[in-house]
Length: 260
Image (tube, rainbow, N blue to C red; front, top):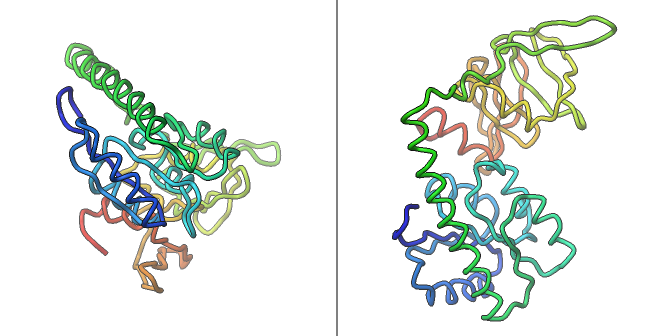
């Protein structure tokens, strides 16, 4: 969004009356253009990836995939400006931990909503100015690309020895508590880093998040077998299987450039 453009806003709530209340308030805002809506977390993930809204008004409490799960699925760094909506004030701290700009505690009045929107407009104006400056700096500098910071090898320490594992040799990665297991040539290797950190440092052209707890080397996938409700089993070249969930299916489709 650049200065002068109208805001595209996504409203996410599993309760239709609550969604409509927010939409009605947004219609009063001169700075708001397109208003999108989603009735569940999965639809929210797809809408964010497909439409890239400037602002997401996101209900915390939803069945299956809740508001915080939506943030995790997209990645906090990739989320649009986000305001959480919750009926429980104890969720406020978790909202700010998820990099939310603000939160609305149900039931909220018109004045509280207007105050939140004022903060949103200020932040978007700041972001537009900052992004313009970043574009200028990129044009006049030779800053290293993000690809230069990707891991091509992982250092795995185990039993007093240190092993160098080439990223291209990893078939898939699964969460193991606060760490991950690397699956390499039929073996499991414990790697002491969180799944989100590993996902950010691997080459996205090769590695794709397919589940809340799994990353797959796309070169290792032999076939996809449909299960139900839009989910698949990914069959890998070593015979292993891992689930492609509905939540992360869109990321795989985006990487492939075609629908599944």
